[in-house]
Image 1 (tube, rainbow, N blue to C red):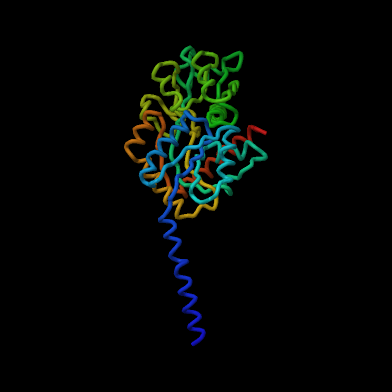
Image 2: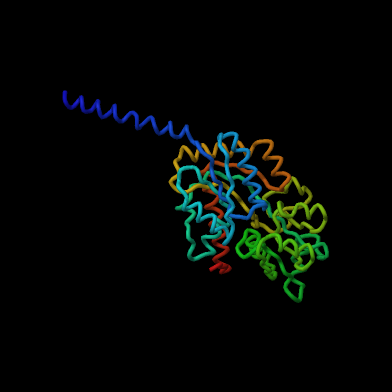
Length: 325
């Protein structure tokens, strides 16, 4: 009898603990959320985050405040996210550099993507274009490869920096096409594009978001897109595979992450709000204007994509001995 009474008492004490967890999850969020963006304000990544933050606000019932922490190839922002309290009130943009290539470019990275972050979902894909200055005597990928082969001096190609998706895309193209060029790395996309338009460098891989206005103004010529299929914005431009360079797909991917330890119900709530925002008319319209492809996923699909990208770019980086240390 005494044992039954103790058991009953124990069960009654356990009940409140069981029912408070869902209550806490339902109460989330009860305060504004901080969204860390590892790039400067005004750039494509920043605009993507702000567009989604504004749309997610309605679904979550709280403000989402974008906090730009640029620098060191996204490491500053990534470290800030890692060190944040895992309570759902700090989230951050995780892209190809942060999650897939940095671990292979740096020997001593202050974070481990696999251990320090929980992935919430994908949100955008920046499609890459192989472009040349209009003065370049190549109107197709085949002609571009031939021009490279015939050049007495290596033809230069600009990138926003060593190890960026644009740089890795060109290295992959070089490998798959059997052609070579001279790498001219810049500190950011803006100066690289500026010199391309001015004819200082003849070629580069340019993301559609940064290049669409220059394409429309005929300031650059697009030879191919590095995506699996043709882009709606450039229906007449072939893919690299169609142009004869197989297995050369490359993207700059972006998704949403949080510090490891963030409760699963909160991750699911954020994913639901993100997926809903991505499919909204306002976001689709704004992304189309930006030249960005909206893409949503489950946390598991995002994690699988990150692993695949890490293997792909890690192999290339190792083969070419690319390093930022």
